[in-house]
Amino acid sequence: MRTKKFGVSSEQVDINQLSLFNEAEKFSDLNAEEPTLEEITYKRAKKNNYIGKKDNLANLERVVIEHRLEGDDLNCKDCGEPLAEIGVKSKKEIIRYIPAKLVVEEQVIYSYACESCEKETGESNIISAPAPQTIFYNSMASNELIAHTVILKYQHAMPLYRQELYFDMIDGSYSFKTNFM
Image (cartoon, rainbow, N blue to C red):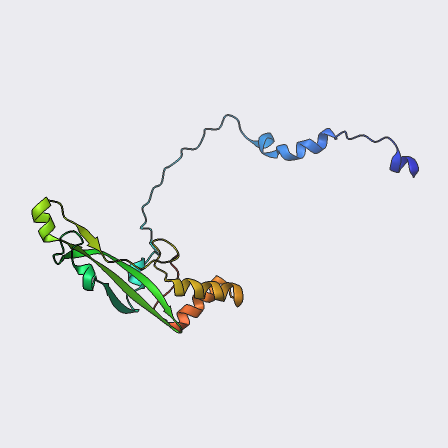
């Protein structure tokens, strides 16, 4: 028993064992012709599941907040003449979180120019109202929505997929399947 357990052994393989895997080559005809291959092509329309940010926000309540210059800011700093409104500088949509309610705020920022300075110097002095800042640059999420998401995640230990269900319960018309942050 000792020699069987601790004695010399060999790892040689019996030649008959290797022939078990050569059945296909053994019984095949080497003179047979190769089959002709047909190329089959087809076209299919790939469904795009992306809805888009704007379509997802269509059912939320909208509040338009206009940022305009007021008082002395409406006068030119160089010549003192009143500034004329020349248009809208930009529009930015921010999703604001109000407890148990989601609202889309459309931020409209106006630009102003001094017509008298433009006539005198040929250069227009363009001034814009200050725009509200969010935590993440160019994000649709307001600071309140980001803070609420972080509180739900870390203070209440709610995973993001359950937060999605939570926001769907608040307003069933919107789905947070897009990455809004």
